[in-house]
Length: 233
Ligand SMILES: Cc1cc2nc3c(=O)[nH]c(=O)nc-3n(C[C@H](O)[C@H](O)[C@H](O)COP(=O)(O)O)c2cc1C
View 1: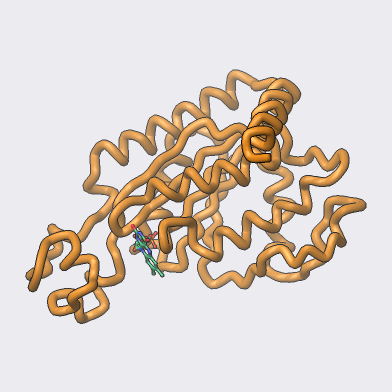
View 2: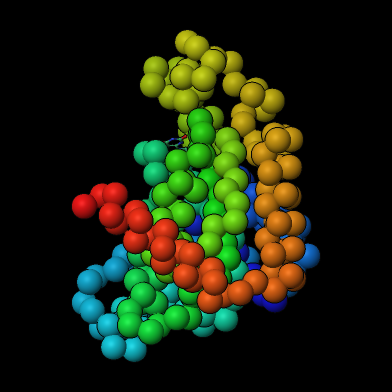
């Protein structure tokens, strides 16, 4: 069983709350995994060229191309993104848009697989897993758990955090905040979030080891998607 982890944060792996949480989930699965950071990668969104319609292979040649075999070979995914403007950041959105290549005809490479979604925001990461689950659903992937935490907004380190009237330190702590290390949110100091990440990893590992019926998962996800469409037309 192999799990592909993706951290969609553009920040250095040591500073990124997303990277840390995705890694925590992966470590608790007890399965083999690979964690790939999208930091520094150039991945465009889907160009709607439909070059993938016939054979499920995307014709856009960029840093997603070498990741395609990893996506296909993985049995499950742990994908995390930072919350930018109350949704996932553009890099992760672009990465997931390109999964459109797997959707056509009988291109069942991803159908019936399992996933965990992770979000981190300066105030809250919850909006991200909510968005991400829709991408999973469109590829008939079951989301087994969502994990969200609070990370360090850039305003704590931009140099103007104590005086900026619209920065996150002012929003969280009131006017003229004196920034200390302890007040900078860090997912590793949030026991409930770290527990949720560990529990999500264990659950994913158990589901994979038990051996899940990909056909049954696919059918359940197809029914779920159809119901969603019927609600929105
Ligand atoms: C362009 C931009 C927009 C952001 N918008 C939000 C937001 O709407 N809500 C929020 O909670 N945090 C927001 N943040 C803060 C990030 O989510 C926060 O810094 C988080 O820790 C990033 O995850 P990382 O540490 O893995 O990079 C924003 C940050 C940037 C750079």
